[in-house]
Image (cartoon, rainbow, N blue to C red; front, side, top):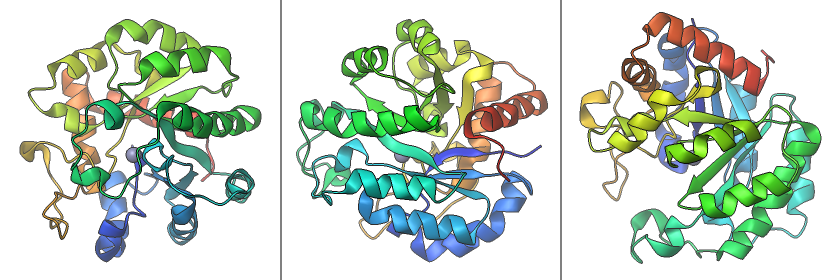
Length: 285
Ligand SMILES: [Zn+2]
């Protein structure tokens, strides 16, 4: 049974020196039909995502502007460029897009993850998010949404605007359990990240225990969101600034960890997630 990484950033420069080894090892990790969804984050990396997905058939491309990039300069014709990338590959989806209030209200001014980032105010994030959601809705494309401390803003937008009939993926869902029924009714899917296996993340573990099985996916967000030490089956050297680098092979921890949290048998859980992945991202291989 294949395993799939529903969300990562293999195009990230920090993975550049390791990408060929990761690609060569992927079939052993994920099975011969295991796939990963590689998410662009700004117009400058879309061509890299496209090139990787042409070279490695198990990389599915996703294109979008991430909320951390919503405050950066971009070409005036960015929506037309995004549309062209989406139209060029029947496997393409929209992502990573979203809203992030953490970077505005909670992140330290010197957080290295936001070095060089102009933190776009929420109104600017919304005006970047909505046309991308509209593209996914019009074409019924999968769309991957990042939402951190911004569900108060996201929910009214999802209620008020067209959504893809197939639904939308809330990656690394970090919201409260109380929102789950309405999100499910609006079409939400939820991906579990092994960083949530940190013993301190009990609230998020409790949320993932009760989410509907037919709306679950697993992801790594590699090279970000390093799992707790005990769950790192695949290791990479740290970045030049010393930051840990997550290997997409750690997707195994998402499956074994989430199956254990839910008291599920790993084989039937893996089959359910494979079926979910195909229903959400489509069968194109
Ligand atoms: Zn991501």
